[in-house]
Length: 368
Image (cartoon, rainbow, N blue to C red):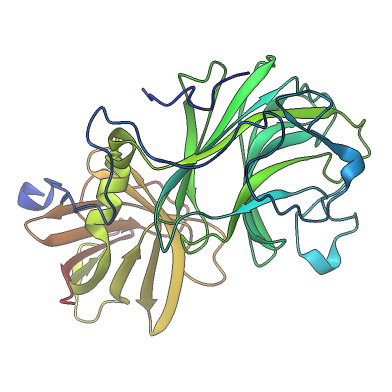
């Protein structure tokens, strides 16, 4: 039996200088070196200690006795990808869910260890699930494709799917899958030893207040062979101090709130009326008014570039390309420089010159 505790220690001119503000945490976190509080835990020894609420239960494909100390779910055909009412395959069975133990927008870390799961056929998969309903969820797990096996991450909002397929993974007898929630941004990672976790990135989903969390094993939309996924434990805990102090998290928090555009330059020229009047940052989402129309999109920060990279998933409702830019916060002034048209490479400086297609804005924080 692998302990659920395994893997706990994880390990310009003035405008150009970006000095992000450190915002105080909304919830208490453990002091450095202090173990984080366990919110939920099930080791599946001699039964189950949590109030699991399986969605579309099929007892013939679930067992606590077949491999004592494990919750074994046998995969079968079924998918929740795409809008529920129009799926051509049956809906996924045996979504094993428990109620989110946190209140409001509180953060958490979900970890599970899956044993003896060796997917070889397309869409065989097992992992963790954060779930509101069949059209609103995120899932992260080990999944087979036509040519390789790797970590796959799917977010769905109102039936619209976004998929991230990450590194190929060497199959071993055990794999640990982890999701770390910070507001409405979810980081995915995995480990082959339960100690060192490899981050695969982070993405925005939902409003930061999920209803359910749990585990899933399925063959998706394929007619693949049914195989077992043995879940050794399921744990939900608070963040460690190190996890809470993630640089990207701190910088997102420093941006939170509404910022009013005070000056704008386009193609090196001052403009009297900016096409964008304000930005509101909320976790991993940013909303803004462009030509009088309100938009809300995902955004990401690149901490490795200088100035810091800033990418918005789109700029207008019909856009298909992201908008790349750079950003800096200095002495209470936020500077954003965006490359146009969408899809253009990010600028390397917070400046615009004649004909470069850039939009340079200075913003001041709007009082509460």
